[in-house]
Length: 195
Image (cartoon, rainbow, N blue to C red; front, side):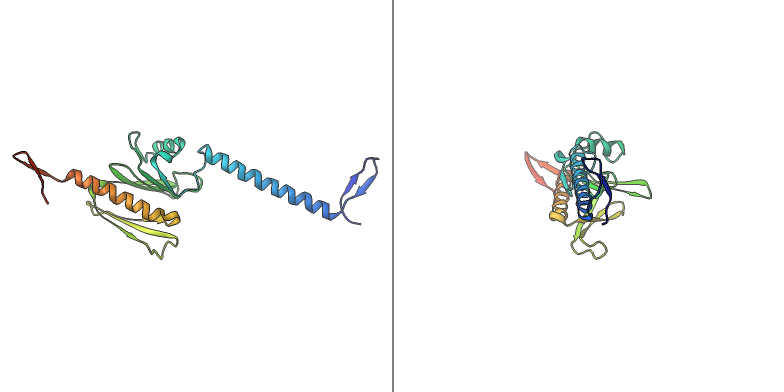
């Protein structure tokens, strides 16, 4: 008979079957996995790990994550985030794109160094979306051209149509900023836009 020795109630050693050992190991593994999932859920709720969502509105971002973005210099304390996408698995500061009323910011860690690229919405010349990006499966490519001849190619996840929602929000924020900058000519009380 095979198996490990175990003492019974009378102090005699008794072997228990491999089947019992299998069940004990299987239950231990299941319990460990369940506890790990519970820990991850609690850590996510506490803002220790990023949420599994791809796209966040400004008010949905955990205060701990906002503090991290400020601490890393990605946003200023006065910045109000309209929409935010993060690709970071364990930290919200690994990779992300966000829109504020005044600017678009993209950032990523490369070789341990955080690179931040802010662009004023008023400096954006063109915004395009390539829905079929072969170099990044599962992503669309957001292409932003700025006045200073900078061009940004930013992969945006297609999950839950985050790509289309982020693109639309950026277009709306950009157009609003452009509308505010158009000169207005006032003649005898009438207001006319200059094309």
